[in-house]
Image (cartoon, rainbow, N blue to C red; front, side):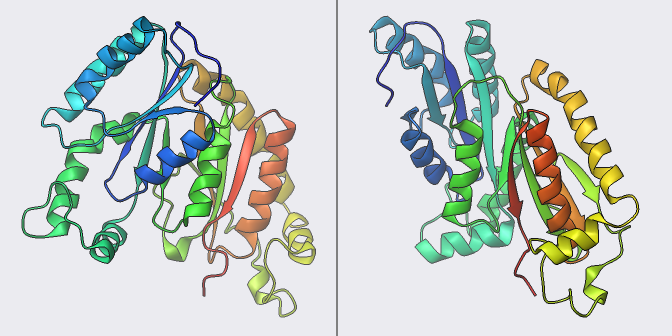
Length: 292
């Protein structure tokens, strides 16, 4: 909990998404970062709860609320609540946590607990929930796919996004990936690096990765590599003010090559450095590095 309290509206983060995708972990991280966290609050009572806090003199400038789909009118209640709060001056952001069906099934089976919406099978509940949260996912400020993330990686992503509260800057997560493992489901923009020669076919570079100097130098020396990085960083810098005007503070940039080991890793690291030089905070995640 933050030390200083205010009677004025502050920053509000709504933590939602798929059950089993990491909402509790996200809440713990936000609490460690100084956010006042309210867990499992029905969306319909969110405005009255915050108003009560304000009237009692206990308003916190940084508030995070965890909500789920167990309310029948979940989306309508949440949409109405957030519209009302934005009208009162709250800076509202929505964090949506996602994971693939098979990962969610495994997680529920490992803890031997039922999904809140399941009938006969866990998968039935997951599919029902996806339908209910589909529109909310499309409107979310930040979508994080936890399918291949461990607790520490999720903590890093949330810390990078929310450590400084309501500062009006664009925060980018640059994710390297391999096309043979599929596109990152939380990507806003995708950069394809497969036009560059593949270090996999250079015997001395094959066992190395894009984090090694030899591979990085090889990739960046290829025709078009540096020009693409400069152009892409300039593009992000140009559209960043528009994202912020529309209330979007987070963007996920996916950078792909065939296996996610050489080209995409080197290009992601270089792109992140360029974005930082242009005033865009960035975190690099190598999704498929180390996979066979």
